[in-house]
Image (cartoon, rainbow, N blue to C red; front, side):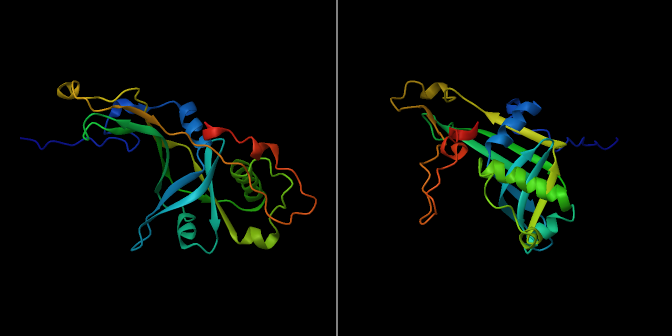
Length: 220
């Protein structure tokens, strides 16, 4: 009898609740454009870690930045295979049993290795990151030569990825719980920005840039 050969599924295939997988690149871009933070696995020998970092999508690649003194960024700059995750939490699904309660979310996993950017490409990528994380701050001073040396900018091509979306409009209550007088439903989570607070002592009392003052709720 020949041994059974197990077929390996691609890492981009969602295994748990596969019906929630979304394959639209447009949907992926919407998630990346709405997010501010990515979590990047750093599989350094003996020092496994997951690092949160500011991020921005630049066309067909993801940009992250940090200090050139960071061991994590120096290791990622070698192009090691890693996994980057981005999650947007959209609400809590409250069922009439603890077991059936869950969350509404949009979650992306990006696979591949990062490349360190240099020269004019690095400067341009920093401009993209700045506009994503601080929209409208075009008058802010650009990095000096020393600051550029101290900053690491890495790019990840969006070639291998998976996107999982859960968007329930009602909990999946078990039939035996339907007659329970316990409340069930959806509690939406909305991401909002507070009113910008100016730093003290700014000469001329400049106005808050419109892009910051009108930053849309949720960015999505």
